Amino acid sequence: MEKVKEDLLHFIWKYKKLQLATLATSEGATVIVHETGSHNHLSGPDFFNAKVEIDEQLWAGNVEIHVKSSDWYSHNHEQDSNYDNVILHVVWEDNGAVFRSDNSLIPTLVLKNFVSEDVLNAYQELFDARKKSFINCERDISQIDDFVIRNWLDRMYLERLERKSDELSKLLRRSKNDWDHVLFTMLLKNFGLNINGEAFLSLAQALDFSIVRKLHFNPFELESVLFGMSHLLDDDKLSDSYYTRLRKEYRYQKNKFDLQDEGVLKPKFFKLRPSNFPTVRLAQLAGVYVKEQNLFNKSINAPRLEDLYAIFDAAASPYWEDHFNFGTISKKSVKRLTKKFIDLLIVNTFIPLKFCYARHHGKAIDNEIMDLCAQIKVENNSVVSKFKKVGVKIENVQHSQAVLQLHKGYCTMNRCLDCAIGSKLLGN
Image (cartoon, rainbow, N blue to C red; front, side):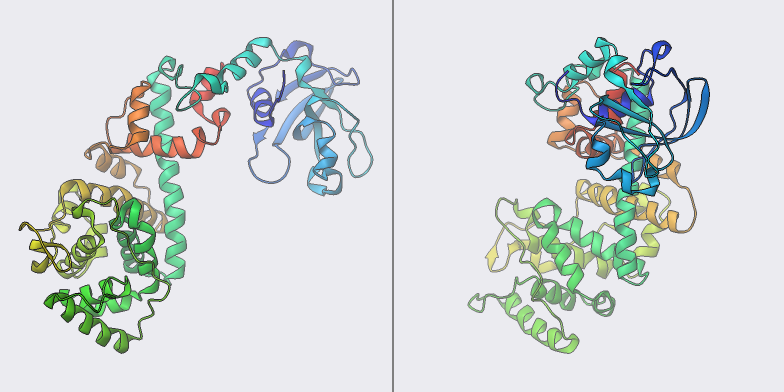
């Protein structure tokens, strides 16, 4: 078999996809695998605390896996004391003896002598790029038991929450444990959606949240700072009375608070529907903070989905009722946050924040979060649609978030052998 990769060798060893009755080292010593050990995904040997009997002598220690035995020296393991307790070197091809740092020989097990063609053929079939347009298992995933997929998606969603929680914890440390500031940062980023998320995040990072606390009683003052720092008030030729007043107010606030806007990215309008223009979104965010004076505590303690909808039942200031951008009159409509947009905020901001907050206080709220997710409709995006097309049932936002994590963290990185679905397809 050509181009064997180490992940396949890990899979074969971990799940004992071997002709176990006839195992022997390259020197001819009999091998009996009692325990393969714990799979290590960090630095150090690949499997910890394995138990292997070699020529009727039971050994307890670590197992290292390579495609070629010479990789031991390519990776400089002979100089690393972490590998002194390796009891068995598992390889696909033995191209030379390997020794520990004390010059003692490490027994070598050559996998290609003990693996069936069925395993290798299934592996090649799974990774055959000619037979896929989306993910490696797209032709076979419908064969997998729904129970296996459901359990794996549950794990994927928790993995996604944990990843987001780690990001929120970093923000929390930078803000000196100010949860309100973390909420403001994440809200701004998510109000920007995909197109302006980065620009809005740069605004959140440049604006001291203590200033928002001082200004959120006055929507005009808060708007002036949000628009001004975002470079949306830079046109000195625009003749619009509200725009002119905002420019004047921003100059005052900038001088008063010594605002630094040099590093803030200017948001984009191109390819956006008017309802998603950055002007409208920033005005709506200002409306939320004017409406709710204690946003973090109120939202983090909201017991029901309906309570979160009520908190975000906010609209932009009256100027925006007949504007989507400065100086251009449009058909009159209240620029209120829609339920669909609030769902996005709940999924991408409040649920991860609630999870992170609970974890920081030593609480487990997995069931509460799952209940919230079960009430929110599935997101509509290309990844979710394609998973549906290949036969995966996606019934709520937990499932749609889970497949996003699966696709980004596993499918696109060809981590099929770390995935419960890929493992099942290879006969585990």
